[in-house]
Length: 211
Picture 1: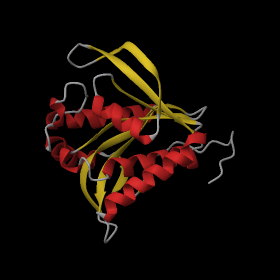
Picture 2: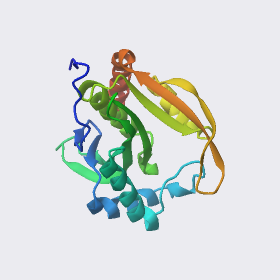
Picture 3: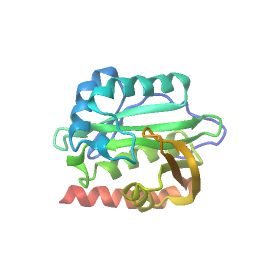
Picture 4: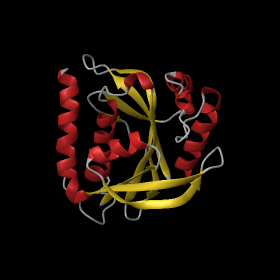
């Protein structure tokens, strides 16, 4: 889709359907599925992330929906998609557009986690393909940002593998739940890079599907 700059598309809840996943607007009804997904791998034990425990999932849903009301976040629930029927399956995690600047428009893709059992199954590149495609092709973003903890080497590698370029490091940038200060690594993809990034992601999704 060719976007006309200056004619912004509203950044509002939308369902995005991919090959392996479906991204649905976050809702309170997703609570039990999200709690079960977080339990899959006990993801909250990764100290360099901020993944809620099942007991705190309701608070996390409330937090994300409150930020949506303020216009700074658009949160999604990630579901597996049945490739035979196309129907939505079990809930496997969460992702968002965050730090939204509607005037540019510009978004950050972040606050993302998936159940441990689906890591390496193509769900993450498929999710990123959907989010980046909507950001660049529908919303008309000139750039999309990614941020992660300096010590989260898995996340840094995954972001770089998307084709994002590292913009810099914000040292002692924010405080973690345990009181420690986080050095934040900032990456971005700009609109002129999107066709190349899209092709690479499509190939990764297709290869997983063939297996």
